[in-house]
Figure 1 (cartoon, rainbow, N blue to C red):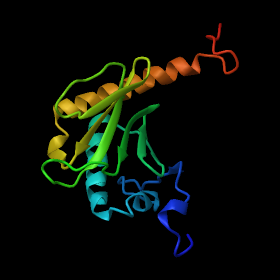
Figure 2: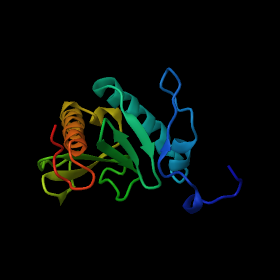
Figure 3: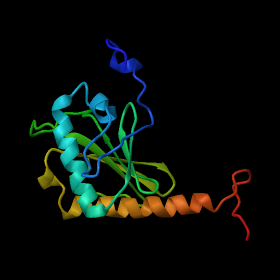
Figure 4: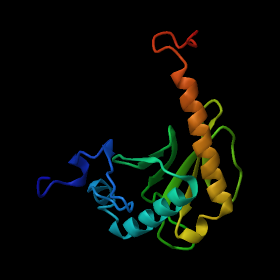
Amino acid sequence: MTEGRDWDRMEVKGAQIERTEDGAVNDLSVDLFFMKQPELLPLYLEIERAVRDRLGDFEVVVQKSQITWKGPGSFAALWLPRWKRPDGRIYVGLSFFLEFQVESPRIPYSTEPYPNRWTHHTSVADLGELDEELMGWLYLSKEFSGRRRRRKSRKSCNTGQPIVK
């Protein structure tokens, strides 16, 4: 990498993270993502390891504005803080995708960008916040991503119609 490049010009979109056998990051992509807020990197790594331990393996894709978890389709995205938490703690933003809206005080914002695809935004400041409720939503999101992915693969690229076998 060239010295002196600023964040806005760095080519990190779609970079794949390579990991060692013990799951450690073996690439600078994650470091580049957290360059503006490096104090959040250890928190992110703890969160990813805890989710991987509970939900199994998934692909990690680092982009300029978020880190996306795919398994097989996108089921969660982590991002740098966009608002301040009332308790003042540092956190990473976490978005997950479901076919229904979850109403909870833990989810300050949700939207339905496509029919039956709700995006929920929350925050995680420590591993204690990865409780059964949040892990359940992530589990459902991963399952939903698999169903969406299978439906897409059964349609023809040209017509959008189901492929007849």
